[in-house]
Amino acid sequence: MRTLIQRVTHAEVVVDGKEISRIEQGLMVLVGIEEADTTNDIEYLATKLVKLRIFDDENGVMNLSVTDVAGDVMVVSQFTLMAATQKGNRPSYIRAAKPDISKPLYEAFCTKVESLLGKSVAKGIFGADMKVTLLNNGPVTIWMDSKNKE
Image 1 (tube, rainbow, N blue to C red):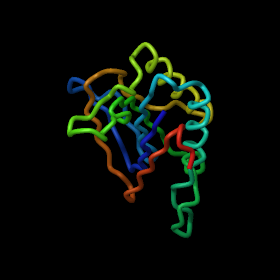
Image 2: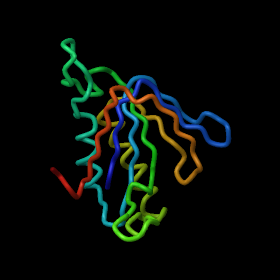
Image 3: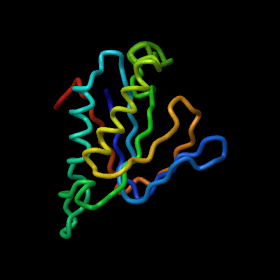
């Protein structure tokens, strides 16, 4: 499971011209899921996500988590995070889990984040053609992979 986490001032998801979800200060999280992912991957990444200290404290040092700043979280499923780009110029998505596997894992990830955060997370619509708008604050962008725990 891979996540691309962006510290944002605000973010929104639009589908078919209609706003589906919106957050203010917080984290915009794109999630890619592969067939080998399990609840262990969800537990690891959800816990890291809510504890990640990437918000400024009173001294301007990134020392606070999204929970510390009472920030919002938006989670959007994005199979393209699983792209393999080693050969040629056309990415392969063979590692991305099919919807029957990835949708329940995506929902479980959102539920786990909500549980750890203590409030609802904003979401996209799984499998929809979404327009995601955000204002990256910093910019701060962090990539995490549950299979590569550096």
